[in-house]
Amino acid sequence: MLLNKNYKITQNYDVIIIGGGLGGMTAANKLAKNGRKVLLLEAHDKLGGFATWFYRKGRHIFDVSLHGFPVGMIKTCRKYWSKAIADKIIQLKRVRFINPMYQLETDFTVDDFTSKLINNFKVSSEQVDNFFQLIMNMNYYDNKEMTNGELLESFFPGRKDVHRFLIEPIVYANGSTMEDPAITYGIVFSNFMSKGVYTFEGGTDLVIKMMQEELLNNNVDIRLRSKVEKIVMNNNVCQGVLVDEGFVGSKAVLSNGNLIGTIFNLVGTENFTPSFLEKVKKVRLNTSSCQVYMGIKEGEAIDDAGDLIFYSEAKEFRADELLSMNTTSRTFSLYYPRLRPQLKNAGYSIVSSTNARYEDWINLSKEEYKLKKEELIAATLTSLEKVIPGVGKKIDYIEAATPLTIKRYTHHEKGSSFGTKHEGLEISMKLHKEISGLFHTGSVGIIMSGWLGAANYGVIQSYEVESYLEKL
Image (cartoon, rainbow, N blue to C red; front, side, top):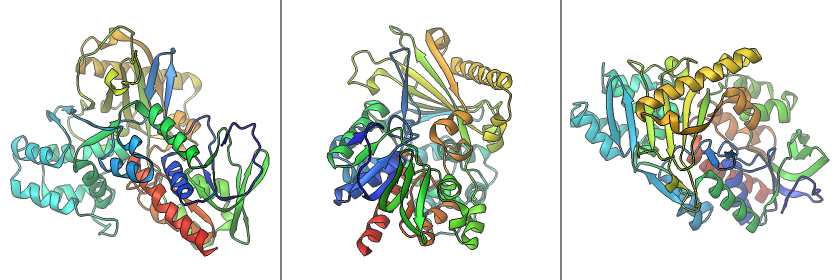
């Protein structure tokens, strides 16, 4: 049980999991169901990691990352969590694209995308079928030399509008670029494109509450407000962790923290071989993001303008434009009262998300930082007014988050919203080859990012931990 930081840890564990993000939580649940004694340590006052929420003015609830995930989340939750949690997953019916090249609406299924490509973009059915046949069968072991840009150009030469339609939503979702390996696009795209985009009915707060209850029912010890200072080793064998009150022993440790932070901060370079560290140094972090949270006044309503809106005033898609502090490209996630039927007075909220660079924000003075946040809010409102005219008068609360906010609350290196680039996955999966009993799960390699990727990677790594424990 534990939960409260004031309760002292008085025993050793089979597994200590550092970080209560979706990967860590899912691994904890799987291992506990196997009969393992599990301790889950979370630095903040609630579980969820980047899958979180917050309250303002007593009535506004803002979901930080509940913007959509693939249908596969239903199967994952049913198998590794509970039927009750899986039954809360519902489809987002209206996904809209608004930009100078085209304006259209889709349910984000492969059938509808096929129809749009043929009928709206006038692409031949043969081109479309060949494209989908390739990407729907991509896997991690495919050719990593071909880039996203090369993939799209090979099927749709010169069609920048088609390229934008196919890749822009994925770039928003996981920070990939035209220069990243095509498999990082194909695998994620095929996941989303099978049967649409989904979300949790009840909001992030309800699903994390349900997950916490499930963990406790399965005898997982959870301790909140407990930041791990170090992972302890002896002769390259994991022994446990150091928290504020001292050493806690375990047979294995699974870090759900940022991969780079785990290696350099929690473990230390002196514990790894030079050849491994050389590979680690080549791992690139993914970009960060900014968000603007807007709450609608009590008693006010907004018409159904769609569930997820990809909005941009850029004449054509460019990754650098999406990352610019002056970008006109953002996604609007609209949360209607129907999302939280369990609440009597659930209101409307809107979350705007833009991709961003940590480097653009970290060196600003306090005055510059405040000004840039105000500019971000103003630009967001200007764009939103073009989508929902008159909405500004209905908003009674608004605030912005930046890469620095993400760094502060998640401890992700450079505020990375999507973990590492693709090369990070190999490092993450081979961590236990360097230090026996040390494992990692988290947002790595683009493929293992987002709600579904994080949960599934937690499952994958739980099997690795279980295999290690069985050998002991």
